[in-house]
Length: 282
Image 1 (cartoon, rainbow, N blue to C red):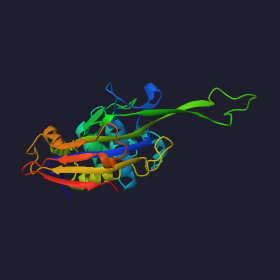
Image 2 (image 1 turned 120 degrees about the vertical axis):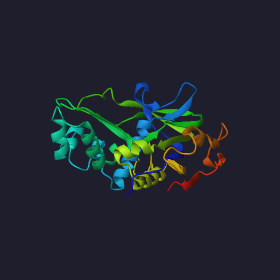
Image 3 (image 1 turned 180 degrees about the vertical axis):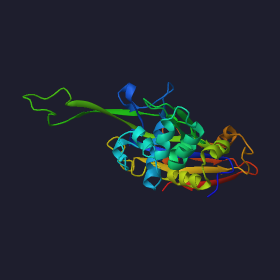
Image 4 (image 1 turned 90 degrees about the vertical axis):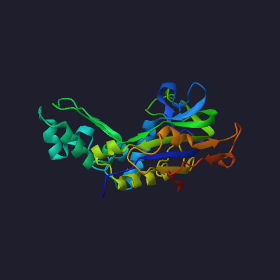
């Protein structure tokens, strides 16, 4: 297994149909929008879904959701201290931050990919790990239309002679939208965390199946679908082109009143000497 020795850029195009891809807790959990009305899915949300897929694929993940935790630990601190060498280093005021970062990266995929801050109450050592994989928020191609419906429940949460105040509620969804997000893998940071070529392949696989095993009331099965993944591989560590230029080489458009992905047009302008692979979502 070899450390990734060439820069990688990628882009993902996905659609949303009658679902809430990423609710905003500061706005009644309505689907996120920017001030121009375009839909957004935060990079944090995207990384959460990638972590979940990698966990499904058998990778060890440090930042696990409570409902998906598969190692019995109830907190990040407990998970970190489950590795004796890490527990010893972080309890030592003179512990080596570099050694801690390297060990943590070896143990957990998401640490060597996205990085992690290890700072827990009572510890003598705080460590920040910068990961090589960076991801932008997903933005819709057109402003989104949000439908809101009122929902009710037919049973009280607690015993009483009248319905509780939580009987009524609201549910919000995006009628239809197509989103795109981009990202990159930095080889200099990959060398520091030990991010391997095999790790990059796992990431690519996770992107093509991003919404599998992710269903919920807000996101019914099949309501979010990955259509295309574009994966650019440079021939050097620094790359022949900037990530901005590579990402701009992919043009994705759709009419304002589009109702299906069939109305989306995709134009890929190839750059000399740059390998690009187009994959379909599963």
